[in-house]
Image (cartoon, rainbow, N blue to C red; front, side, top):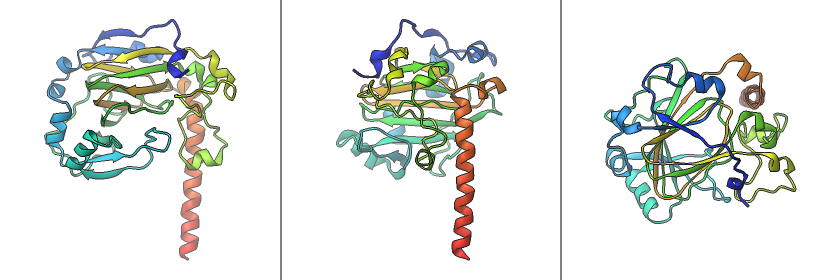
Length: 284
């Protein structure tokens, strides 16, 4: 079996891409994932965005390599010439691009004409980053959640997804906030489950999980509320752009999995301070 075998009877709702400020407000309050139709029509700057566009527009790109398990873990990155990445895309396939386009971590190499605007429902105050993702195909994520809301727009190719609501967190087997190794490896939002070969003997509560399965097609966007567990894999060559923004209430932070996230982040902050103290003492 694989993780998609845990699909339940619920289906994901599809709506037109909202153009008003409060367009997602009811769904955010309910923590309800959605498919949005009409990305290219409502966000005109995406109309020409596909692999060929970015291959011509970017001189360099930030990529990560596959780990031994075949998964991209978003831990180590390197910047390479775009022509080298193009060769990877056409030969070894051992590379997945993640290039910030707006917000945190934008490179000085990014051309000014590759501009990203925020949808009306993404607040400026809560916005964190918009990333470009390019994969050669068969690229897979970990089972994880984000502390922010996420909007993933499909610009070329398609991706299959399964989503588990925050109230199923106990079935997802997150790393413990008291695991020093997990904290050192920054396993803040990840599950311990192998999505390709879920081990129900080692993780028996997983058998009670019921997810929502669907396909994200070109021209659509997938809204993933904060705290929603998700696993995504691409079919063939794929290009997507997302937005992350923070918009959680105190009630959200007091429930799992965001409470777990808050504890882990505080623990990592403490470890970082200890590292700095140790470095200063060593230097002295």
